[in-house]
Amino acid sequence: MRSTFAYQDNMVKPPLLYDKWFLFTVVSIVSLGLLMMTSASIEVSEKQMHMPFYFLFKQLIYLIFGLAIGSVVLQLKTQFWERIGGYLLLINLFLLAAVLIPGIGHSVNGSMRWIGISFLTFQVSELTKFLVVIYMAGYLVRHQTEVSYTLTGFLKPFGVLCLIAILLLREPDFGATVVVTGTTLGMLFLGGMRLRYFIMLLASVLLGLAIIAVSAPYRLLRLTSFLNPWAHPFDSGYQLTQSLIAFGRGGWFGLGLGGSIQKMFYLPEAHTDFLFAVIAEELGLVGMFVVILLFLTLIIRIFLIGRQAQLLDRHFQGLLAYGFGIWIAIQFIVNIGVNIGLLPTKGLTLPFMSYGGSSVLVNSLVIAVLLRIDHENRQKVLGFK
Image (cartoon, rainbow, N blue to C red; front, side, top):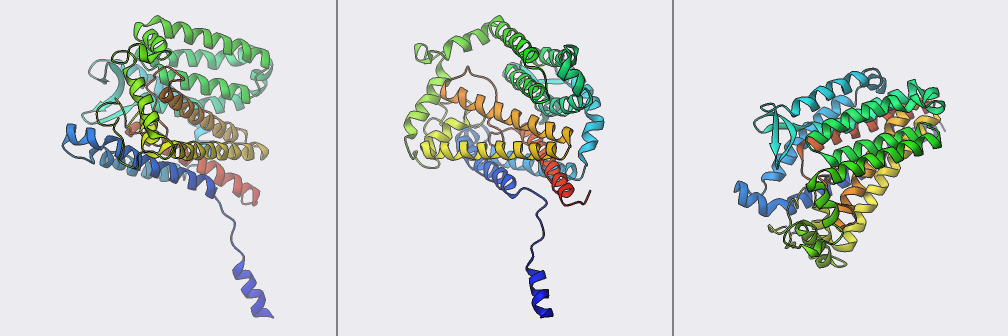
């Protein structure tokens, strides 16, 4: 009898201290992203660098660095971010200003978004998205009553948002401005802002973005050309028409891995902003559905982590997870909208999949913090904390 109980005790599985579906989804998206990014970049890499897998090797290096940084961040309690969030955002503001200084900031395709030395550059706007979420989560917890019942409660973070937007637009980076603004608005709404105040703020932001969008000739051209790209297929509508051709060629099941024609110097930025078009061409409607399903699963799991944290009275952690979920959802929706011609062209990558070292590093931070939030949730449920 005693041996039977011992056997049953050995059969009891210890509780998981992480969300296996969340982790599985992240690994699946990153793995598929590496595969498709390599396929989309192999022709460009061969011609420009004389190495067919140059972009793959560089992406893997950043991914290894990201895993190393993420493993360190995973050991930090989430209260650490709550304590230093404001200081980190202040440092980030200085970095955004430094990017605009010639000799410090690096220009690529006419935009001053990178800071660093030689090939070791970093896109500060990617870090801004991460730090804005941390700052807003802390602010909403500290000023919950003020945000819920007074007008000044949301005017304070709105002032910070305006300063960040001004610096981002000076680079210029309208895409990052949209993501940061949308994420902030979403967090304010979930943080308890009164509906009438939220509508007033939303109307003001939309009006401001509209004015900004039409104030610069190149932005106005993007707004008008995406409505009918075929009117100027070899000029302002070129990139979108090539992307739409990729979607049309893909059909139900695609041309097969490596079979894309558009990536052969027809579609600009095929391995970055327009990676989804290459996925559509090579994997077809079925492949697009798989990618969309994976991202929907990821976003749902992130919001479930946030909901669990709030049910455990861990409001900072809950808002932090919500903020990351909103950010990923906005960037994912905007990227696909741009690729299929529903939205004007913006410099936004497909999260976790497109080529970009800065994006890989920051995404690693996001995943590490989310895993830590989920880990702490489970510890509290089990009575460990």
